[in-house]
Image (cartoon, rainbow, N blue to C red):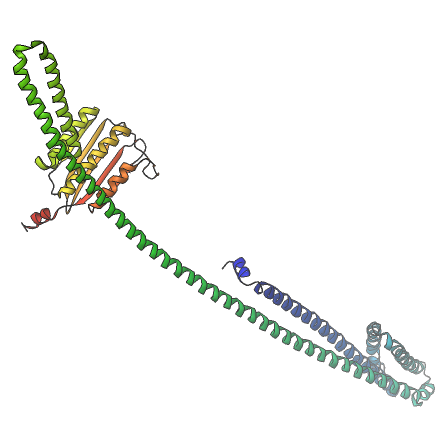
Length: 457
């Protein structure tokens, strides 16, 4: 899903997510750092406690070794003493570095160190006297209470230091637990905020999807309504076109009949009158015969012109000769007038009177367009039955045009299409620049033809 779309739909979602993420990182990192610091501190405290205990043990071992040597005067009893010296020195150095971090305890540690050093000097002095054979002097030192008091003071300080370090360890442990608890509470709160942000996002998404669905449904209903309206308007336009074409053909038929009946009768009567006049003036006024011959020629031209006009208005050959012969005559006349070679492949078909007139007008309009625009040298005209339909096609080898482009002057093709659709047919135009043009129409055969085809079965 587009992040920008989400941010645009819910302006609080992105800031809340960023804030929750930053707070989570901050709480987690802060808790981690504090926990690590306290764990490190606890490790240092534990190490210091272990060092103090090692020091205490080394002091006791040194004292034990010194007393064993005093009682036995055997050097092997000094082994614990010798081994403890290095431990005591190392422990004092480590504790000195440790207590440097606590200035308030540095004075106490200095006094403690002096006690340890004094005690170790006393032990060393006793051993030296024993080595020199001064047993009585060594006995006096051992039997005196100075060593006992020093050792007691040392143990008191050691126990106090151990207790203090244990207390610090417990405090550090408690602080660590508190930090973890705070981190747990913070992460729970941040999780709740994140969950709230997620719920807000889901709510916004659901509302957005609902609005989108409502809008889609509205657009679909509007689209369906428009499609129904387009179908309705197209049907109305088709009916209107059929009505206008029928009215125009009826008007042409009426005009053709009037021209044939009235104008034809007048011209024929005038020609007969001219013939009678010619027989009368042949002897009386022979010089007028040339003028009369010119008049008769004019009347013949007028009759021929009238017949041509009548044929253009309503081809009488359709009713007298049939569709195939009428198309052959139309093709022959167009070929003679234009000089274009016409190839006809015409088979008898069964169409209604209006269907035959539609085919005739289609071929006639195609010839007109070819003569005006195509610059063709050959034209192929075909007519045949194809199952329950009749297919008529006119193809030329002219310059062609882009059939996908909208041509503002292609009203002839638009008229053909509506005329064919009015008869329940389909018109297709295929053309490419430099590859000629093919106009093809498929119309349903008449019921009589369908019955004729079904009768043998």
